Length: 475
Image (cartoon, rainbow, N blue to C red; front, side, top):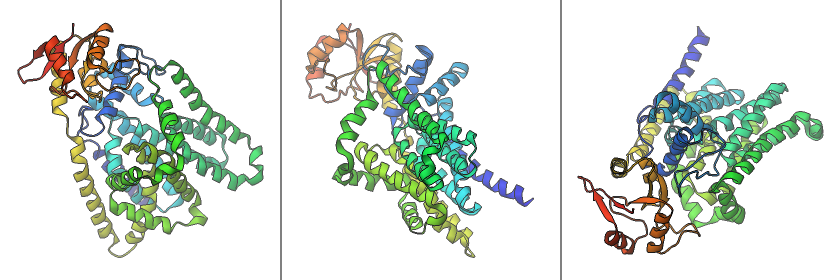
């Protein structure tokens, strides 16, 4: 009965974590938070279904007519969404179910890792913290690949620990596959290799070079993503991953962490993602880490701090902070577990969790707000144009183009060398390549000082609906 009770308590925590992700589960990708990335991800799933159902050929709706193959992560999340769309139709609840499922799987791995090093009470606290972080709640139900990256990243570490403990080939094979998939989802997860290497050195010492399983691990975990990224680079028209690495990360190294922009980013986004109170608790937990017993966790913390310095400080994308989350949960659970042991510890832990929960709710509400103007503008386009019509949108954010469910270009962004920068010449370029309509965002065009709109007003027919939204007919 005691075992059943213990399992029920743990199961209840998982149920709470899942329930926190149910609100807004059927909401469109066009939210205030990360609508660009969410709408891009969802559009890739639709394009799998409507154009080329091949996981090795992801397609964007921009910039230009299809195919628009794009260099991005291995498309596990989008491909699963496309399969669900194929059988059950285009429902956003299906799209959000995929990342939520991956996150719940990552929660299982975090709990199993915690149980390897900590008592059950502390493991539950770490699990609950991991499930209620604002950054985790939002991105675990966002139509993005972050949840799948967390799943494979934590699974890789767990299976590697199992291999270190038991030396069974099945565990190193699983660790290899999970590491390869983690890196293929988000390259910064490669830093998980640092604690893995440390554990191998501690166990085998100088004999590490005789361990054939580690050679296999390296070939699979690094070779598979390397081959994938080489392949996708060869077919892609837009090489985002390659550009990020070459133009930003490799050119800045350590010095980016000390820039004003990076410091302001971390000062604002870390408390936003994890709450100030939990960050303080995690720092306290780090001071009291038991290096004799849990040193692999300590090395893991160091590895992910290095990732913050080398990668996140350069890119400064909010969702890249998500990979430090498991360590913050594990570290913060240490002082909280000490509180739990006291006479009224349960009361204090409950109050702390309620405090964090309230802070989380307040911080997330603005992110869930849908951009109704964008949706209305897109609906107007769908009423007055055909599915196959190529369009031009007046926003650098492609969410409007994705919401329209059309293919085309983003105007006046001055990004591509082969597209003229002059408004008149740019419009002529779009028309020459098949664009039929120009869609401003309720009359707004990015970077326009008036010249762009003036040319459109003078030379093209304006189609206006009853709510005042309009588009220009280019041909």
